Structures are given as C-alpha cells and as structure tokens.
Length: 159
Image (cartoon, rainbow, N blue to C red; front, side, top):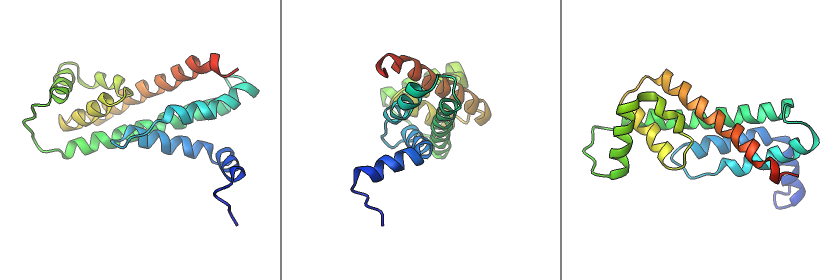
C-alpha cells in the first residue's frame, strides 16, 4: 500500500519519476496555467551535478525533457492563439506584443521563455497565423538555452 503522506514515498517517487515530473512541470509552466519549472529543474539537477559532471547523460536528458515539455506547452498556447477571434484589444501588453511580433516575426519567440509575456508572444504568434514550424524552432532554441543558462547560473549554489 502506498502511503502518499510519508516522506519516503515522495523521495522514492522523485527519484524514480524525476524526468516525468520535469516534463509535466515544464509543460504546465509554458501554458496559460501558473507554474515554475525552474525549481523542479534545479532540484533534479543538483544531485546529478554533485555526483557526476555537467556533461553526463543524466544532465543531458534532464535538459532535453525540460526543453521538450516547455516547448510543447508553448506550442499548445500557440494553437490556442490560432482559435482566438479577431479582437480590437486596447490592452497595452497585448498591443505591444502584437506590434513586436508583426515587426520581427517568429524570431521573437526566442523570448518565449520569459514569464507572462512569453505566453502572450506564443498566443499572439498563433493568432497572427505565423508559420508553426518556424515558431516551433525558435521556441525550442530559446527554451533550450534558458535551461542551459539556468544550469550554469545555479552551479555556484549547488556545492
């Protein structure tokens, strides 16, 4: 019987299913739902860095699944944006995002990792019907670089 209220259950679950937790945390963090995948990422990376090296397969797969989950979450927001009807919004944040994406195109999705405004960029890119493949490429690059940077910036705090 599982005792879900015990510490040992969650410690074992974390060890056994860490990459799944990372994927779902990253996915949900990139949708319109609130979330913070950075905490899960650093929590999973710290023990792997302390016992191994940065170039280990464990770190590679952690970055891979974090990037994949976060990118698919943003792509979900992109597709939700495609369903939005034409709106006459007076919201400054929305108008700013629309102007930037119309000016720079899919390359603005390199910034899709930014809190709040990144979700708006993804939704507006879908709403403007930008090419989904180029959006996917720029989202993946931006989100992958974000997790790599997070790993390197958190290294001094892992020892």
